[in-house]
Length: 321
Length: 286
Image (cartoon, helix red, strand yellow):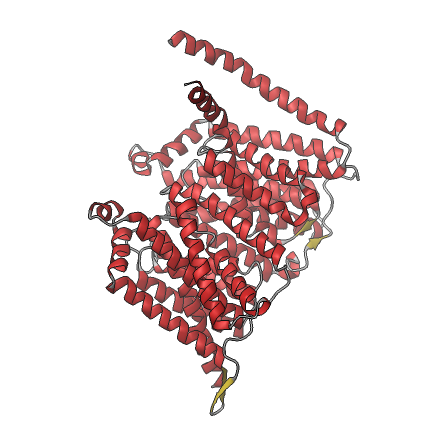
């Protein structure tokens, strides 16, 4: 029995990297087959939101429920765009600047809300996020929040979407690799321990407040980076992409895929962005598709889409009996 | 002088509407442990159903208010039975269900009525004059209805058997179940009540301000602010926080723009949470 299990594990160890390499190859071949710039655009948006959702999930492994994540994306986007547009700073400086400012705000909220736990933390960060959106509106002179901020320099000097596609594919893979390494190194394990019981964790000498601030800084850095490149790619920012509903949507992406595993948010984001686009002819009925996906997943799959293979296996055994 | 009186009346009207919505939200949270993010959408749909009855089909306005309260309360019973009960105690999955409900309700309103801003006709036309002060009768009636409903709710929760059962369930779920209280019946009543209260607020606010498919988001935010600021599990805290936030919302726009007003209110709440993480009258630290 043990031998059998070992052999299965051994085979898995070989197949898993194979699956990853295959998926990357397929993704890098997509622009050769799809000519429509609109579809490529949808893929690029999916890549950006994958970074955002996975960084959101990275924060949740420490047991915090950050309901201000879209606002941090907004901080990164507005900082980078305004710095590049008003001061004329080069992009290779402005984009890391946006990411660092978002991380700085993350550290600030981490220290401010260190006493708040679970639900109170979620609510505190929710109010912080909505407050940030209002701050964008107050500084309308620079953010142009009401009429939409435009005129920031483009990311790449091409009209075609294909170079953008490869740029975002590479960026997303890099960010995913970094976040994966972060989650499965010693710090990530410590964070999971804090999630299970912060009292036990602090009793064995873990400074849990510092770790919670650290994970916020990392998560907000990546979301700020995603926001900054998003701003220079779309070149039109509106505050509605960063408000409470946007944050809740990010949560939907993570929960539908399965917030318990690393692959979950990636699958959920891809599904919830791409599938409604397939039904674009339905026009105003499209939101029903998203709602239908949410309802089906939440009623049928308790673990999210990641738990689907296991669920199907149990259904098959039930059918055989 | 005139400005002061009008601001006070506005503050009371806003506070009573906020408290009506937040009270229902707090019932759901205390009894079933769910954060009902769809509460704002239910508030919006209540207003639109009243609009449909009163304006499109020409019913009496008060009758359509009553009809919409009954309809939305029935919808609340449906929600409790088929959407919240299967996920009892699982916060993440109830949030997903709530978002799905928000999408469905908002899209349905968009398709059937349209996205342009509508308005309910006033329930009581006319302007009251007393000396130099003139005041629309509508606001006074809203205030009276809101205050009366809140008084009824206090009486219901503290004095009736069902209300006391609700209190018992919110204090200790298992203990209440062991005493023979039917948890599901209590949560069904709470859900219907919450939806009914939100509908009343939606109709009255729809007559004072206007109806739009996205007006629920702001009210949901206010309900969250009230419940967290007042303290989870405290009914008096909701009244206190409601009066505070209603007063701020009514008086701050006299001095500054709308967005700054909202930012200041949220800043105050965040600062209060820093010093009292459990809110003003909360039972326990989170």
